[in-house]
Image (cartoon, rainbow, N blue to C red; front, side):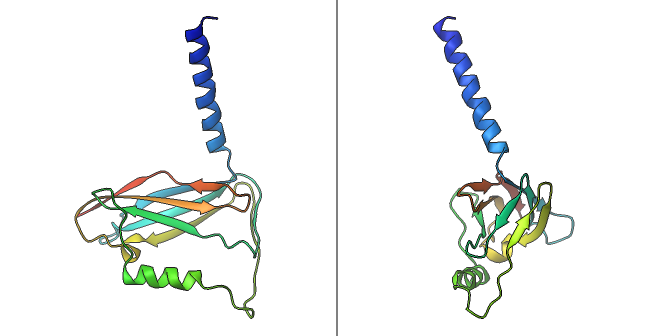
Length: 152
């Protein structure tokens, strides 16, 4: 094989391997805008899909992180409600709380509607981009693709 073919084949294998690794994580995150009702343009539906058995132990508090990018590409600031929610979630569990370990089985999915307009400043008109991430107990991070939300 000549050098060009070797380089082409190695490049293809690297891309194929990266693609398979990205698809074979234990959890997939899907995001889609919810615009079925008036005034809901700032809402998204987030779906976690389990590809394998995943156990979220009580000691590992896993939270989904939502990132909202303004039309100029910068991160949107938290609203008062968004700041309050983040502050409440960062407080450690009290000793009196009961912890229930959560397990997701292969093929199981969980859906959640999120009003990103209530959590992030999205008052200016334009196209906002939204993505989600979740740190998993195995140390990996599940990431959604970037979606667009049009605000008028």
